[in-house]
Structure formats: C-alpha cells, structure tokens
Length: 155
Image 1 (tube, rainbow, N blue to C red):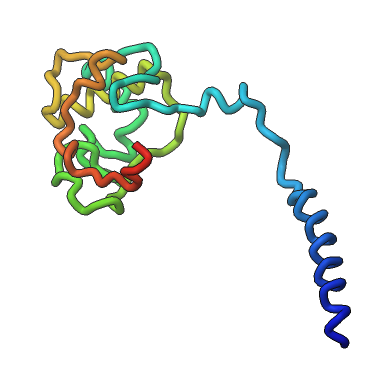
Image 2: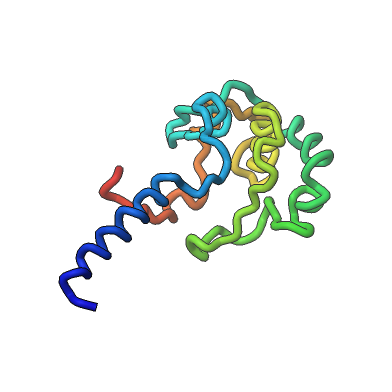
C-alpha cells in the first residue's frame, strides 16, 4: 500500500467510528431530573441537606430489633454482617469495611431513630437524646480527625 493513501484511510475510519460513538451503546433511557432528585442525597458537614424528621434511641431500638438485628446481631454487636456497636476505632484507613445495604429502605424518621440508637449504644450521645437535622451535625465522632482529604484543592 502506498503511504499517500494512508491518511485518507485513517480519516475514513475516524469519521466512521465517530458516528458509532455518537450513537451510543443504547443502554436504557435518559434519567429525568425529577427521577434523580429522591436519590440526590448530598449532606454537608454542617447538616445542610439533612431531611426533616427525627428519632430517639428508644424508637431506634425497636426498629433495629425488627429490621437490622438479623444481620447485625443483637444490640448491633455483630452477626452475619459487621458489628455496629463496640469494636476498635476505624483506624485501618480507607479500606475499612462499610455496612450500608438496601438504600432507601427506611423512612427519614427511621434513619434518625436508628442513628440515635447506634450512637447511644456506642456512648456517643445520651439515651434520652434525639437526632434530627439540628442535633445530628453537633455529634462529635471519635474518628473525626482520622479522615484523609483526597482532593484538598477542591475544598
């Protein structure tokens, strides 16, 4: 093949592949902003973005017994999945196992109540404290200084 035909072949292949890329892989349909909104849970450290609602450790204990104990053990001390109460601080870095499962399966009030229950069991809040958009951001977590900011220039 002569080298003067090579640019024409490369150009033809490039134009042809451009059309294929523009068509896309046909994997589903575009998502509308209204469909994304319920899943767009962006909560800032100061509590901005937290949903309305609230709950207490006592309410959370009942919910935990019904919906969580089977996997996380009695009082959250471990079962087939990770313990939520007790244990060592999360000092093993970014690869520490996370336990979030079945997203959006709880109401906002249930999440606040379960959060209050787990925080109270870990002695981070009192057993009569409640969690809501105002109180939750004020909880001082024990590993608060152990996080690595991956992109400090984006803060």
